[in-house]
Length: 397
Image (cartoon, one colour):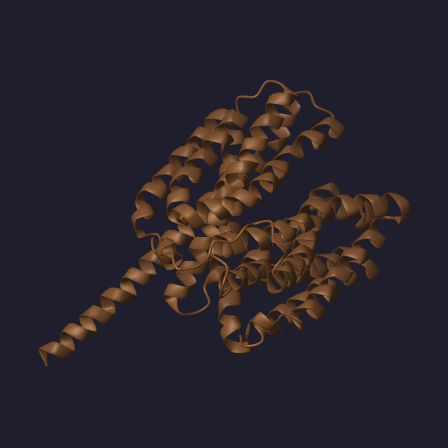
């Protein structure tokens, strides 16, 4: 009888440890989102303080994705060699320090350099935290990756809310970012012991692989799916307000409705995606998500009214919510390539969509109009649905 009781206690202990690990990984995702959203909340103040026009500021902002992209080949190797928990222990605090330097800039070139560093450490954090997410999902034994990305989205709202309060209290960006440093470092200190510390040992028996080799077919396919999704996501981030202003003709007080509705549904979709995976599988969920992206964007193009566009953008939010988490989760389960390197390869291809999507909209809009450019991005959702059918790694999900 006592043996049965001990077995039950041991089972409970393991379950509690897994839950604590999941919470720790979730909080690391949250920390990353808090850092990025804090920067985003002070963009107007920093632009005004530096007396930059739109063209100059747009060029400087490009330094952030450049830093992210240039670091991608190295982040995966660092994670594979030292373990994601060790890389996070360094990169996440460095990420917040880079954030604080943004609050000290007095010239445009200084902002560009600070954003470049912000992008470099941001990419290290991105690969590390998603490697943690994959490891935690494997430890948990069921889909939980999308909920981690939901934590990042939730941090976006939190960071914006904190920014709104501090802006109204006349707190300058530097001290705002120092407060965020304190919050993030406290979160890391509390949760670091409970992160997954085993993926490095699991990879010792795998052969060394050069990053610049012939792309793995499965990872390339997953990267293309991520490309389509992130291009659609980038379009929403950068152009949804412009669409509501110029095409829908919404009053100034309602221009933000499209972006807000998109963000709310994206966050909601990420918290529901793990449940939906169990009910319908990864493959079907991703195909439906692609259809929702196309359907939402085509609705906004064909029926450019306030209500119809809001509903369309909500559909896009639900559609993009699960694609990237599922792509990363699938890449992390590659049988022969270490998780960190697999994620770096997939995110390299995917992130091109985030870089190229918004400028593509601008070029097409300049030539034919904003509605046509959104229609082109809508085709990407169809591309997701078609590509998913070809990925053998999703066949058994």
